[in-house]
Image (cartoon, rainbow, N blue to C red; front, top):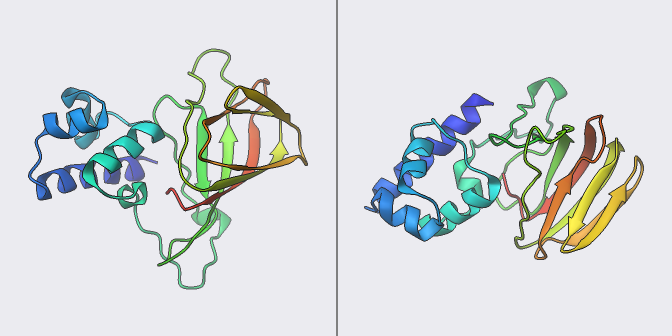
Length: 187
């Protein structure tokens, strides 16, 4: 997990310097503080997925630019080779199930949402281009799409346009595991 976070900070700093932008300029364009951006670049903080979208927009790159390239010409991802990661303070753990290659249009993930008991903040609302499909494997997944709430049980699936604000939540006491497919790829 640490390697992924380290690459994100490094790539943000490289892009900012290539574009001859100050910390303050990028912070203002992305809606965060210069201090937070500095900590992010030095791997002393981790950004939420929404903040990464904002920083990517400010730097003029897709969010996928910040993540390490994992290229497997056979397009097989072995279970023991997956590198789960999460954003600091988030109850959600992501594991890429698909590989990265040129011109791909979808991405599949194994998403695990830990129970929070109020100890971690809930996932934040996000909206982005594309579509999302989820299939619950274990636990109860609560999905908010705008103000509409959907409680999904094992075997339930959902497909929606990701352009509407949405967020995931675990209302139970056990971890939720779901297969998630996105277009376009995010990571």
